[in-house]
Image (cartoon, rainbow, N blue to C red):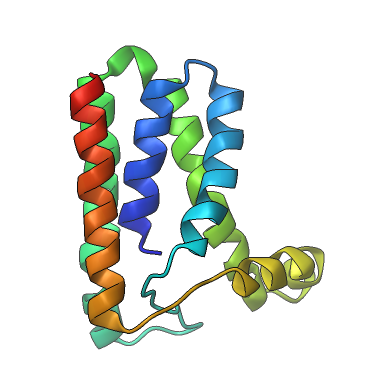
Length: 145
């Protein structure tokens, strides 16, 4: 799942859950549930070409903007939002441990589990599913707040 989807979901969770620890836990588990939904994803290579960087840039650039927008709209909830977003992004960060021999061994089982639950589909369908999810979760957020 794209970083953007996880960031939006984490920010919404953070605004809904006042407890930062609960937000982190819900975000972490929520990430795994989101990855179970059919989606398209890109793999981050050990060494990245300029073309790959340019291809991934929209996802990487919009995610911090969404995060900061939620904090600007809900400044009193910044700790909960941050905790939930970190929880939501942590599984993907742990996947990058494959590039470290020591960390790769430490998190190998989790990485295998995380990769096994992925339900990847072709680009067009996967992006459409993720866009729909973003609109749905933002719509629910706007309706509730």
